Length: 336
Image (cartoon, rainbow, N blue to C red; front, side, top):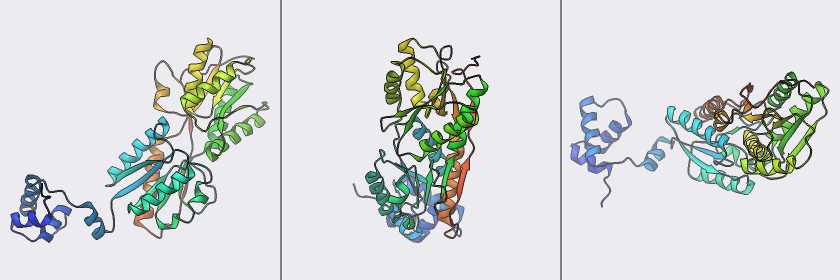
């Protein structure tokens, strides 16, 4: 079947193809009667504008790249959902890719975004080294890092104050009477996890608590690996009254392992997560957690990126949001 071109539409409408182009793009100088007739003809003839050709003329594809580490992670999928909505509201579409926490794959995807002429990239880094490994490519395309605090790096990023969030989590459990709080699931190679661990240790020091930590020996923070790590933990005597999980997905794995062991939450053990994913709010789970405001993170990331795209002299911006504790039913007050 022959593809209908803009010249075919112009011939049928009895106008120049530049008139068709202006009518389709909403440009002024075209009467509403003519515009309506051209739009109707385009629908009848199944004409679809050539996005590639349009982008060459407009110097914009109206596409934004979004590189996440793993879209199967509930936090990532929720964040991607909000980013897509924010981008569409601003007239852009999203090209989504997974780096799978591979620096090599992340670099390849970043180069792909450049070759596909997306207008800009929002990147959830694979590792703490992502900024340095992508350094030579960053000047070639507007980029905003999301979720990682790059501190003084001259590149835009939007992140939650992970240090403060972990500190707040310990503070919350302390006020419930807990003095033996285990920190569960720090993953190596992640500045996010390092900041959360640092916040936990700082709060322990401030409140006179002995730090108790179980690091994540896996490269994933999924429910599956949280469950496996919790199985190892629960095989030993419990010398703690509360677990502060580094992520909600880890916390869900802990709930599964605890149920199998006959450990009641919160009667026998209080549990606090971090992220506030949707599954944590389900009635039979009711996970108390430190919330990352995902919708606000998405909005600020998109706004920051479009500012860089539309204003080449905008420089860079560091935006750090304050988390909050969402109380549900997995933590209880105790007396020691």
